[in-house]
Length: 338
Image 1: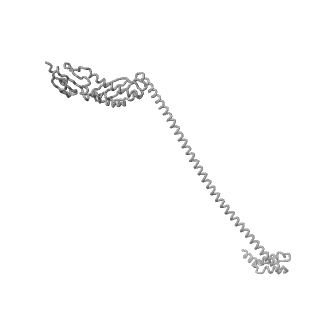
Image 2: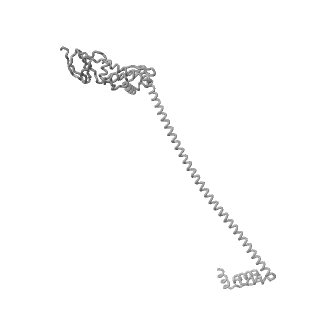
Image 3: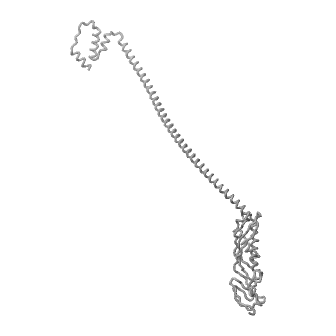
């Protein structure tokens, strides 16, 4: 109707209303009437946009890898981006009159690819396919400081690298290598376990031998102690026997001295008696026998005198004709004998 229209925008659109080349109204989620022949509407979406990406790069060892991920961004300065890209709406269809809004995600992906290439080309294949998170963190930090992104008035909300994949042939080769490595590690584990069992068995045998050696050493020490005790006992016995022998020798020497003293004394007594006898013999020399007998019988007991008398009668029996002995004399002699 004569070019007058009404339009209402969602809250996530920043609207610029141009009239005669000047901004006459702007803001988020506006609703207003306008005259289409003289008015231009610019609507910049300021909500977050998730843009997936996939591209191929080469590692430092010249192996191709496919990088898959997603970048999330939003327009932080709508007026700046509106000055660089055409976000003007068609008054009839309410669509953009240019394809610049569709090119924005590709521009962001291009910057992401350039920055990712710098990281990938410095890493070997094996390290690159395991570095998704470090690469994502590095690219996110770099893209936030990128001048191209800053000039567009875009804020990077997040960047994630889902996977870094080698080619099929390379993947099969890596799988084969990894499989062989796993098998080798399994074999090594088996050998290690066997070696550990052998080592444990060796330690057990060694401990048993050490125990036997310790037991034998104890036995040897016990035998040595017993031998030492026996030797000490023998030495003690020897010392006792030696002491007894010394005592016997000393005693025999004393006995010898005693015998010598006794013999000396006996010899001296015999000499004394012999000297006395010789003196007596000299004194009685020249005295008659009958007188000596009488002298010897002086002070003698009666029974001895009677015995001498009987002996004399016996010696002169041929001269005696008859001898009478009274019973009283015999009785007296017998009583004295008892």
